[in-house]
Image 1 (cartoon, rainbow, N blue to C red):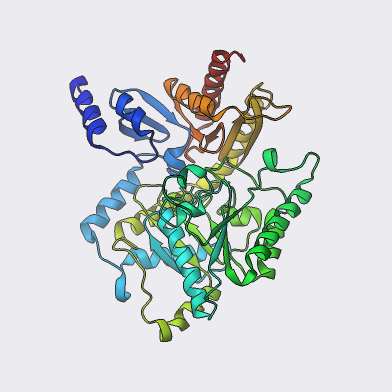
Image 2: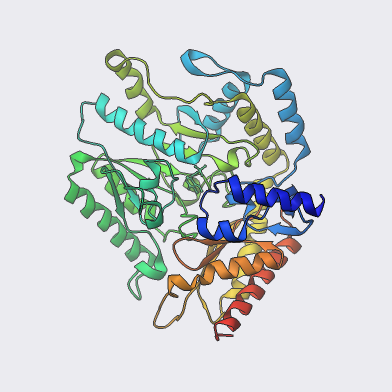
Length: 461
Ligand SMILES: Cc1ncc(COP(=O)(O)O)c(C=O)c1O
């Protein structure tokens, strides 16, 4: 593209495009980075610069960019049936096929699938299902939902509150009043020195139980958790965590919602995070990897226990009053079917497991002894490195110094896109499943170079 055209695009963007999760004043001054094309794990911007994408977009482009089989399937779907809705018992072929497939794939027995367009709206749907369920059971007080600090569940009015990150609340009058938070299973900052995993898990389960008792069990409806907290820092729960949590939930008849938006469909090297960590959810949220982000799609998997109550409630409450124009959009459901075919036939979950071992080994080899690194974490093809001012005593950098953001920005200047996570100075890796070992080497080594340069600039080289 010509330089003048690129400059024109950048000025259109700066003048008219309200970017999500963006420092608005800085954007007015510095403008955008605009991408033109991508293939596999490599993005190309409008100026022709290439970047390895170590985060698969936003943890979502699992089969990689520019898959021609996906393009052909999507073209065929648009030519055959570009849209029809799914209200009032209407349906399309791919929606039926995908629902059946998701029930078959589910990590625990599930009964029905409700389709949405994003992880955020799917988590709102889960909350509405939980409320409807308790209304139907004649328990109108049982409405509170407990989430965790550093959890990420989206940005809609309800799900932003479930998200346990302050910058999603401040300025928006959130969370809504029925939301509570309990501690994240973050060893580095939350465990007492010398605690074993099982002791830490027991302490976290006790916190949850104390919170339920303080609120009154008759008011607590559900607990929502990512199997592994992605955006909050790639937090891998300690051994025994979900078993201990589950015991508490069962004791007080509290439903478990597993938010598998990042972990679903293979990111951990197994199909679902619930399997990896032994969770027994009543409701599961999926999005992102369901279509590898070729088109927006999310889904709520609903257990028979919840479903039967919803069905029986129809006699009293009438038609189930929830759904979107684009619920089960045929282009999205067809994309999901094709994406899941590709993952299965090309053995991409097995590939994620194998390359995941390589990523975990490389990232530890490079960063474990780095002077600014407090912890390297991850499972499968998701990992993170947390940078701190001091390891002993443990002390975070002043957030205003934006060390994580500076490292991610420098990596990008050096040709690798990673992500600085919002809760601390943590850099995340979550590449496409089609990434190669040599691309992983470049991703990790470039991040190291960026970290070393920033360390030198702050006098810690
Ligand atoms: C675990 C989890 N849940 C929900 C969401 C929200 O999804 P969306 O951005 O599609 O609304 C995200 C997004 O990153 C996520 O990581």
